[in-house]
Length: 79
Image (cartoon, rainbow, N blue to C red):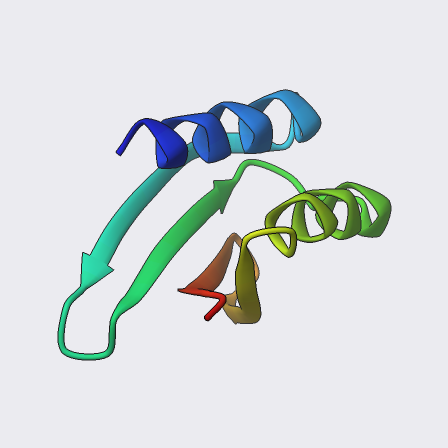
């Protein structure tokens, strides 16, 4: 889980001032890691793009925005 702690720290660092908190979880049924970013104010697109670019080195990334104050990144390990 050290790897996801780095993801959490990166999200907090890049989104300083916008990110309230970050949670991560794992769904074994789909072999998917979920990183949920909860926001205080809107996140700049370049910040999200930079975070996704960093994650795409090791994972396939899908982005979901369930509502205005949250972003969910679904991560699957590249094979």
